[in-house]
Image 1 (tube, rainbow, N blue to C red):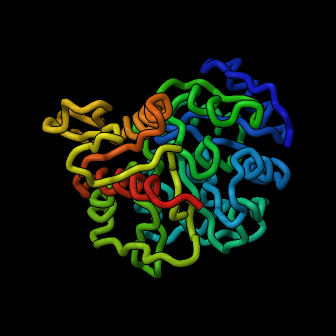
Image 2: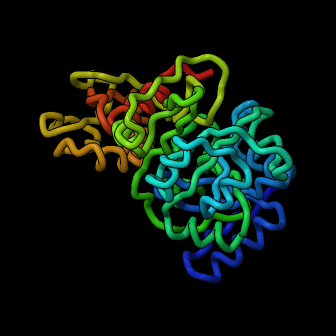
Length: 323
């Protein structure tokens, strides 16, 4: 593994130019999206993509998302059905990833698709991600910028906490607005399939298509973010708790969850605020658990509607037994 002197790049033109230069040289660079920070590499360079897996210690059977600047580029690497194009036109740029048939002879590294005949693709909405992708001029493979299976990064400092010396640079774009990874949608014929809940509520997707979505029933991994144990802090976790026990610190939600030692995702019960706070609060509580003798984290129940579906998905994976 390359031992990088990882640098934090500014969000101005000089920082973007430096990031593009590193990416074109095959080096991994983290950058902000509206969801979480992504760890980018040239999606058409086998060595560069392999560097992502090495830096994250990510299993090679876990596919990556190809980030592109616009729909025209997306259509050069993936085949769009009418339904897929409807979703792209409605929600791109934004926190939606589409898993679509991979076109032949695209130049994409097979490592991006993990050998599958589909490719996951999205157009991020963050202005810095847009600047970077337009300046780079092609697809960037970019999973979340954190060690595999650990809590995702929503700030440049989070990236450095987990990947310092493992990547060339991180473009500092401040705190991510959405705070949850993208919603991933695939298709079974004309039927849309939710492969991973995320920053775009499934209700909005169903309304756009005029049909209820099928749910991924498990089995072989077909998209990023489907591993059972993922997004995990070091501390143990207990979800859907009514209150913390003596050996636990608290991650609450709503106005009736105050008075305990810990943090609250949203005192007002706002799902958007809760989603934006999720990963940063898990990181902060994980550090607190270590200083207090290895306590566990107890998590309040959160409604499974709208963004709550994605929040519960992340919490279930974070609380799953680690491999």
